[in-house]
Length: 101
Image 1 (cartoon, rainbow, N blue to C red):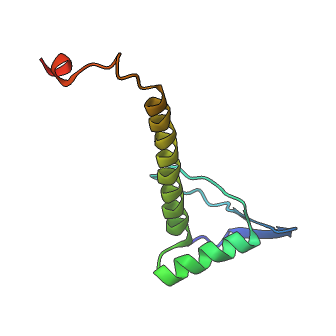
Image 2 (image 1 turned 45 degrees about the vertical axis):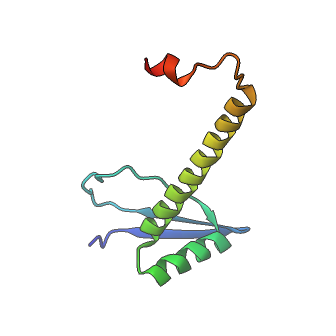
């Protein structure tokens, strides 16, 4: 437990920023970390979701980010598949026998 920590909370417009400073040296984290600034309503929504699921705010944010990346990947792969489909020319395509024999 770190008793020498100070905490600053700022609310500017709809953006909530929290900064935590510590004079105590900590062990390096095993996983990389990022700091994210959220507007107040988004912070409250993610906090509520985490509380309902019984997980930490950090874990919920990580899970939501993973979900968003999967959706983003699906969108990009779909765009690529549509491009491939539009550029497909049956006359230039290799047959099954050409490829596997």
